Image 1 (cartoon, rainbow, N blue to C red):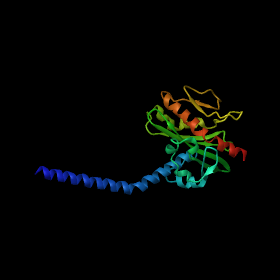
Image 2 (image 1 turned 135 degrees about the vertical axis):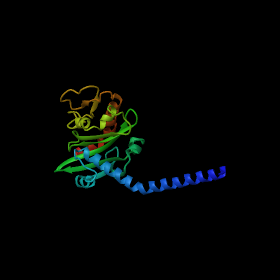
Image 3 (image 1 turned 60 degrees about the horizontal axis):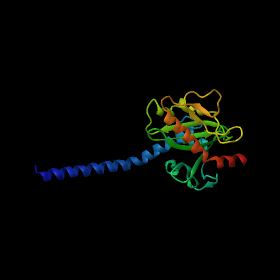
Image 4 (image 1 turned 90 degrees about the vertical axis):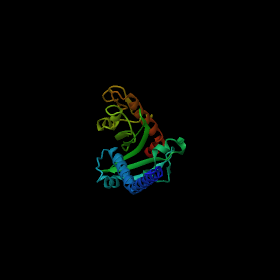
Length: 230
């Protein structure tokens, strides 16, 4: 067996494998995109405390999410598909140029507003959704996730026990000043409307959640004010 034959054989195998992998990726792409859509629907619904399996997520999303729209930093509605907005791209833009998605739900006659968030944890990006009650002050629920936080530490932001702490918390104080929820080190005082317990050993990720809530909700203030005054 000559070196030339070995080289040609190896080259042919590389090309064949590359073609197989490329074809598989092309065939699987629609399924992957659908799975991502379903997961996004589940997360949005989770922010208003509606559990949804993969099988029922689309039906529940269509049942409860009555409006999905995009607004700008002044609270004005702009054209576009809210579901398709990629927040990881938007947060790189100047605030005045961002597309801000809003999902409005009706659950048994109660209105809820869900907005997406994105920030930075210890090892990578973190993201989530916050659901607000009709007063646009009280948090109805929250859903958080991450790409690479440490199991047992920062990764606990995705645990339901952590997320449930946000229910009933406030993002404005009694005077109407913007005061988003902060994740503090240790245990939050009972009845404190703007603080939740931090994650033991996950200080940087906890701070990341605090910053994400502040930065992610602040850009919606004009929209919230517009809705409350209408």
